[in-house]
Amino acid sequence: MTDNLDKETALVEAVLYMEGEPLDEGSISRICGLSKETVMAALENLRERYAEKNCGLELSGIGGGIMISAKHEYWENLKSRYGRKTEGKISRAAMETLAIVAYSQPVTRAEIEKIRGVSADNMIRLLLEKELVREAGKKDIPGRPVMYGTTKEFLKVFNLNSIADLPKLGEMDIEKFELEGEKY
Image (cartoon, rainbow, N blue to C red; front, side):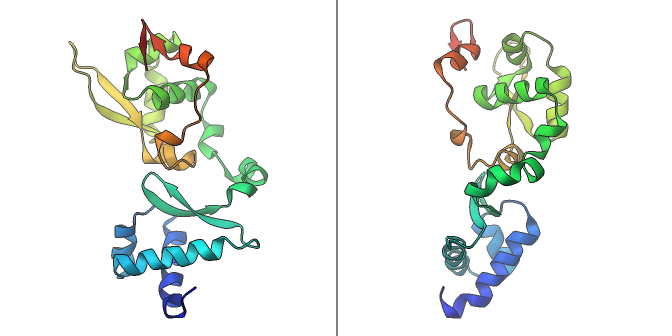
């Protein structure tokens, strides 16, 4: 780690710790009062520090931002206590609905109901309240139904940098997400 950036690196680390939410370099720069270049150098210093064997932390890219998190290799030991808190608070039906939104987005309530075979109103309402899904516009068909997509909170809860990081669906799973010959 570069000696002349020790204080800046410590400041960036403190901000990431205190915020507890993913922040982009521009936000970190504004909060710390440092140039983007200095922030990027400080983040690289943190990556180097966290790469040490005796460190349990790492910088994670979540939804276009950066946050401090437990190293992936320790996650199995920690997730029962600290991880996926939302998962334990929502029902299996809500998780099914969330999976449909995640893999099929943007998707309408009617499309979700067609895949699940039951009403999705309450599940969508719950997922909106928990900020795991959001309204992602209106579909250009008669009635202009609302389309839903996932949020940054969803990415954070499931420790994903982007939707592209979702586990790939197998052939059997893909069939579950097909509607009348359309793939979602």
